[in-house]
Length: 351
Ligand SMILES: *Cc1c(COP(=O)(O)O)cnc(C)c1O
Image: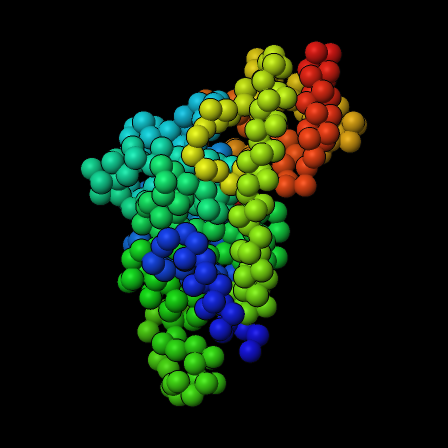
């Protein structure tokens, strides 16, 4: 059996065990996981959903899939580029139904404050932890604190199945309905029928084909065996980076004094007193030295399709123009890190 079957069930079981959560439902990617999360929590046309702009566009697109209105909140600071709970508070209206938070780089949002606000205003909380499998907030795994958590197994994530996603929750009703919605709203799956477990099915909701198959799940199972060691390596690399970069003037290292366990999905730095022209110049010079960099992320609120959802987000605006994501992967050596730090120092002192 190569579409959704026993390997997918095994992948879900193992993922749920590793995250200490009751239910994990494997899906074809994280974007559809976010779509279903919004559907499951009852977000409907015209409802407002508060979200960050400093995220990958899928976090926000999924809000549009249910024809809800994304309301962008700023991030806290250059040192902590996760959604600012106080800005969430300011953006709440009678129409607000949910908050989608994104654990930037595998570093947790201020979940205590966010859950407190959500409780007061009766809001659902969806966690996008595409950047943070196994990362923690005060001893709890990310994505197990709000109502629903969503993961991606795209090629560039901590765990990859090529394409893939997972929705996790402690809510039995959400999990059951998620399984229904991922497979056309059908009451039984082909695998059950082939095994003689059931012969007929009904279609009781307008569902989708959002399934993960057993080929991808087999890759996922193998990846889960490797992730813990990989995350330990990444923690060491982060430490080495901080040691090397600490003395360099003109940069901020976000989450520098962070103490919870992180997945270290990326290693971002922020240039101080800078502009996007300056930042791009630095990136070019690093590229010339053979150092590949990236920017996580372009601001979603500045994309053409979101121009009608504009919000003033000064911290996000500065960050997206002045962030640089340095190389981060478990095979990075201490020589690599020394070279990157020395090159960066030289580039900055020339500029
Ligand atoms: C990758 C990513 C997504 C989308 O995941 P897919 O599996 O590619 O659909 C959503 N949000 C964030 C923060 C991501 O990094």
